[in-house]
Each structure stands twice: as C-alpha cells, then as structure tokens.
Length: 423
Image (tube, rainbow, N blue to C red; front, side, top):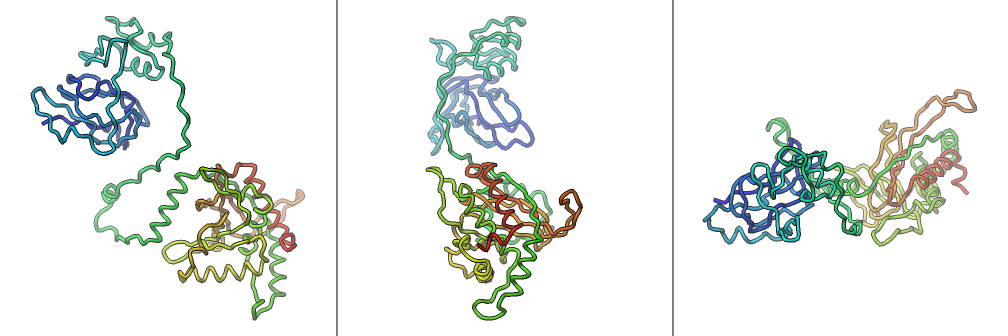
C-alpha cells in the first residue's frame, strides 16, 4: 500500500497550515528522511521529512494555500508497487504540482537529503529558515561550521537574491474563519446534560448575516453621553398637548426622539449616509432608518423611510405600527430590507452601554443605552442629570473616525436641544 502524505498537526490548537516550499515534484524518487516540504503555522515554521522511500505521486498541496490538518497531500509508492490509476487522477479543484526548486542553472530539483544533508549542503534548521525568510540561496554560501555546515553566522553577511516585481494587491475579502465542528462541541458535554432546539430559518439568517458582518466589515466604535434634561421636558410638554384620540393622536417616547435625531444628523453629515460596494461608494440621497425590534425567535429591523423629513408624531405612530406587525410577522420584505442606518435600543432593559453589530450593507448602527440619573459637572459645579450613553458602530471602509465623530456630535446636539428637530 502506498504511504499517505498528510498535513501533520504540529501543535495542539493547530487547525490548518500553509506549505511555503515543496522540495520534490510529482514522479520524483525520494528517500525516507528527505526534506519533503516546509510547513508554516500561525506560531512556527518547520521542515517536514518524508516518512517512507519511493516515488512521490500526486502533489495536492498548493504553495501558500490554507490546508486543514489531516488533508492528504500525496502518496509515496514503494519500489515495484503498482500505481493505481485512481490515485494518480487529481481530484477536482486540486492544485497543480509545484514547479521544481532550482539551485543552479543545470539542476532541476533538490536531491534527497541524507544524514542531515540536502543537495550536498549541510545547514542547521535555523539557517535554512533564515535563508527562506531572507530569500538567500544556501548553495551560494560557504559554511563556517563543522564539516562546512552553514549556520546562522553565515547568514548574517549574506545578500538576498533579487526579488521579482510584487504582484498587484488584491482587494478580495478573506474567507471567514471556520467555526468549531459540531462533533467537537458535542464532545465537551454529557449526552443527557442538554436539549437540542433546532434552528429555524430566522435564527439561521441572523447567524449568517452577523458572521458575514463581523468577518467582512471592519468595525470601530465611538461612544458619547447625551444630557436628556431638555428632551424629557419637551417630551412631557408635547405629550401633554397631544390629542388623546383620533387620527392626530400620539404619545412620544424617548426612542422617537432618537430616531429623529439620528435621521437629521445623517442629513447634516451626508458622508456617513453611504454604503460600500466594490464598484464605488454608494451615496444615499435619502435617510431611511431601521429600528431593531425583538420578535419571537430573533430580531427584525423595520425601516422608517425618509425619516429626516417626518415629524416626531409621524415617526412615533409609524414605528408603533411597524413594531406591532413585525411581532406578528406581517411585514412585507420592503418594510425591513434596505435602510441607510439602524438603531438598537436596549435602554428599556437597563443596559447602560453596548456595541451593536452593523447590519450590511449599512455602514452604521447606533446602540442606545438606558436613560438614568448621573452625577455630572456643569461649569465646575456638580449636578444630577438624566444621561444616556450611545455608541456608534462604523464601517471603517465608509466612515472614518472624523466623519463618525461629526455624526455622533450632530446627534448629541439634537438630543440635547430637541427644539432644533422641530424646525
């Protein structure tokens, strides 16, 4: 039977590794103990030797590719052993065999290593690693160690080989990290210590979007405190004057002021009212604010369209209607898809401060904490005021720090002087 070549686990928490160099190609004869390939993990770089003698067939590990632990990279067939056709055929999508590694004009590949010697060169493992990192050919050096062995000191004065022009930088987004496999999770708990609740489609969608957001959107966070004394006084007066019945009836909440303040702040800071696309920056002409609503099994985010143009009473009544239909799962797709920003308010649960995850393709989300009495200093004198902490999550591809700060300060100004929202 041929000997499998697999990507080995070289440390306890290693899940994958990358091959930085192959020393043989498909069809080469190798000997047990020969230097086969160089392996790099997140913690180390090391040389992997052949575990058997024979002929190398089917090299599947592409250089630089992230390869999971245990993946078969090829086979070593012993002398006289029949090579099976199925084994020779590369699987779909397999990488081509790497080109042979040359050390001089008349060599096609590095010969097998015997007794610590590769291609007739003696070198310490550290010297080999330094040579790879610095682009230095060991064949160009004369070793100063015992029996001409190349060591670290010989690398210090060596000059790296000229490098080819760098390839164009790719803007492609790296794949998300793979989550822990179910079997590994189940192994941590006794079989009778839990009940399984299958995921419904809503929870699966939420999970997919949040993983996508955190894996592909570079988040950063800005936090500010808002003094609500003027807002609470205005809210009390407006509610006292509001019709109690009929089409014109309304009752304003603090959240209604938050929606309006963020909407007009985005109107004032239009650079933050944008969406990232690979083709360019999408600058939105209107402000559509999504508001997260807790529903059975998850969250929905109904959208208030043209929120900057609507009055507080219009926003309040529309939000109540959307929230009720969201909980009854009667929203049309257009009523919860899109939007140019979102609000997540956990103040009613007593949460003082938190960071919200951006809802792609939006570039911002405002996390709103509880309104609470705090001791503050005004004109060098201590006072008690109702304060609220708000944190803005920003997509750094769209919103830089200064733009995010401008948006959050505009929001604070409207919250602390709500009469400005009425004109």
